[in-house]
Image (cartoon, helix red, strand yellow):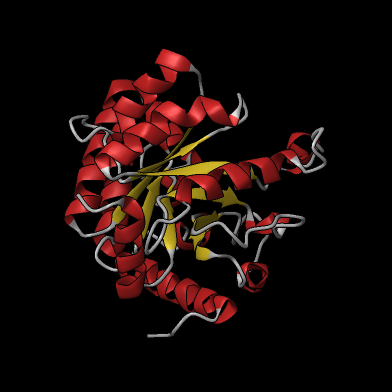
Length: 279
């Protein structure tokens, strides 16, 4: 399989940079007139995929909203991953896993090994047990042609306490994550397969992304308070920016046409902010 970075660059060229989350909050299921159950979850996920799977570059299921229904929810997640890929979308599984040694290896095999029923094109990971703890997941990604998105500067209000703390070398903790990811992507063409997660609400303040050579997932748009124009801070990133919307688009369901129209609006606004070509 081609490396994830290469496949992502191709998908964005064909479909634009938009990433849409599949986040079936209980409140969204209610808004859609669906039961807060595995059955409602399945209808929700299938509707989103049918509406957007053949037109956005990346779909991003949030694992927690499936896990809360136990094995039935995980079965829906497995199906959602498979359906999304069949529609041509890349799947970024939002699991934010982070651990050490054999446990990290087990997470890698669960989400990045093509033999796993939960195999995704990429996964989100947390580096805050030490960047070195990610190596089993990075190694699995290299072997399988998958991607890894590393939490760097998140949009939650308390994130600065850790992520903006200054290390003994004089740089922020978040910048050490950026530098490690840039090292992993060095020399890769057309795009590295290791990305960052930098909340659009945080405006990438103080981060040097000029040597990244990889993708940046920018969540926090819409319901979390960031607007498309906030993406302008990412224009000089060495790599590619994936604006990520969830509730702003999902609240337009269950009407398929309304979901598609919301995604088109979001995609256009983000392309303008990022100075990407408008199709």
